[in-house]
Image (cartoon, rainbow over all chains, first blue to last red; front, top):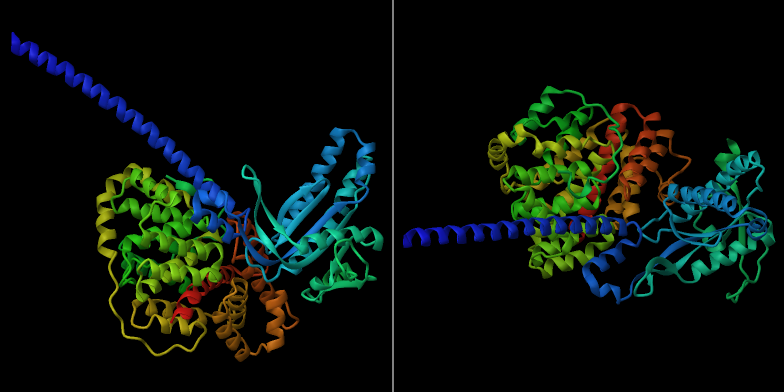
Length: 267
Length: 363
């Protein structure tokens, strides 16, 4: 009788243990699945990051781990900054219904971003109705000046086509001003501890913004600086503009209006 | 079993497979099993052979651990978003007896950085070549040395990484279908055949043996071959490069221009010097070469060369689907074999340049 009780107790104990083991196994499986999902997310994030920040910076972030959140992750490099802005946006924003305005703006952003992507640039940020883009800031690009100017020419063409669409809907036409400059700046992730974004900082970006503002004065839609002209393909046709003083720069700035390319003139 | 790259967009395949008994049996002899992927490249025999010959695990490595080589190939394929190669390396690990769970653990370790210092240094080098190219070679070399890699091991690491860069591009640009490989480990037949596959893989995964150096090569990247003298890598690379130059599908000048543009885009001066000298011997004067390298065009180029130069530049840094769409546009100005050879030359140039910056700078 005792042996039956002992055997029964042992059996019950074994069943309890088996149940506990099974529960633990299930829990481990669930944790394993969560871990795999997190690892997959991390992989995607790393790959995505390498397309949003300079490769060297991503490497530094990956290598430094959590420390990178507080340590500056940036590198000095020569890159080209492009500023594009809508001409007469404020006036247009007062005339159009908000929903229509947003639709028109989104169409503009999409077309400008496509032109930048197509020519291997990266959209840095949207500032109101303006867009700042960088060429050669993420990965080495010895053809960054040609790429930036060809992107600007693609923007000009995209706006021309978009205006045909807007005409059909009796909406106001859009026109843009583009400023481009190349120089040494700081490429990296900047921002608060909670929110960082990729940026290219320094005088190239400031001057590109100032040159963009000169497009109204010179009545030209695309202007480039002397530093950019020196690196540019001779097939791109330029017209020199009078030197102008701009805020934040001691010397007057010489700019060139981009007319088009020899190929397009022939075509 | 697509792994971490299952989300990567992949266009329809750009080229059609062509059967070639001689090349297929060459691949079967070398790898021990049918290798149908080689059919995509048979119109360009040197490329089909290179696709078989440059696998490091089949007798090319004398010093580097074969498992390290597999993991490096996995990491570089992931960095380059090559679904085909990533699935192929996962399949290789699976065929060697690794469970899906173990492969996933390796992937987790790679993303979380929980790695032995030597493996971590090798992986950092692989990643640096995909992300920053030769410009990251100096720092990566220092890290490899600090982690305890010998000079010979470092050269083999460079070969595995450069070779994977070649495989990634040659598979990604024409969008070689990846889904068959991705699904293979889930198929019942493949599970049943797994022990047999394992035996075949183990039989053919062999260490390399020293090979006496052949006559010193004079073509561009001859310096790279010299740096590998005594290793079976020298013979495999030398044969591939020699056959590429001997092929007349694209002109020698067209191929040299592609190599020059890729060396320029990657900022590899040591590679650019050799290629520039060869181009001048081929009749392209210094100013024309300078114009091509600065603006990807020159009046001296014909239409085919112009298309090749622009295409070569696209292969340096890329998003797979975007590169595949751009390569599709190339079909308008090149014949089928020309397109495949252009893909092969650009892929090889990317691999050689990354290898060269590490090894030629090193030797």
